[in-house]
Image (cartoon, rainbow, N blue to C red; front, side, top):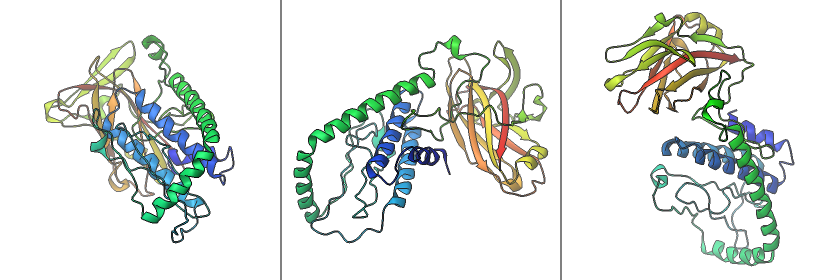
Length: 360
């Protein structure tokens, strides 16, 4: 179960998930938290924002299908499927999630966000479901009912806006938006940053994205005190350095786009075999040179983690990825390969530590 699904199901436990309005409130809070998170991160790329929204949409669709009975044939008097319109940023103009009535068995309608349509400065995109003539007639009857219920809808909107404002304020505090650079850059780990997923809670606000649990039992994969397990091919460089933030290995892929490899010992692979592993790369970019870092891994018989991409800024942060490791004998050591600059502009990344923790 991924973190988004887990967060939604945890939120369900705080109310009545069989209540359609309660589930809709949870989904709306999820979309609101995601949009605010994207807006407060100026380094977020369009590609990453699109993938996050798509992941949340897919998860909501899958969860909501559990509450919907099989859909019968649509009659002329049935309620119409809702329309969903999105603005240019991929945020919903109308409610982001529309849930069908349990009596009709209509599955949730979640917008599909196309990458090219959400580029900054692009025109608004309207995504609307096709409806039959009978459905349009039913829509007119629904509109007249909605007119009578408008006062209640206004009250619901006011409550929703207040809740979203509270979530946004909580999010800003938790992501250090009001702290100075000196307060953020301390010996305490900064909030981990990842492009994979986000947690949220409709009551307490969204959780910090990719937050590393400091109580985990971490297994060290690399530290700058032992750089002998690092391979830098031709055209790349890897040099140990130190400043007031501590020791680190500065790697530079250069104009070739080649990756620097870090050995993952066979003993480490034996400890994570057959378990759920969370890898943590503690890193930062050079001063004033934000870069896009790519991570690949090869664990031999235990498979690989797929390619991961991260936007790395100058502030020291934690970049996480996770995988379910097959229950096999590794037979040999593995590697984690890091490309410091996908744009091939020669930008460097400082690696403070690479570590891994496991759960059964």
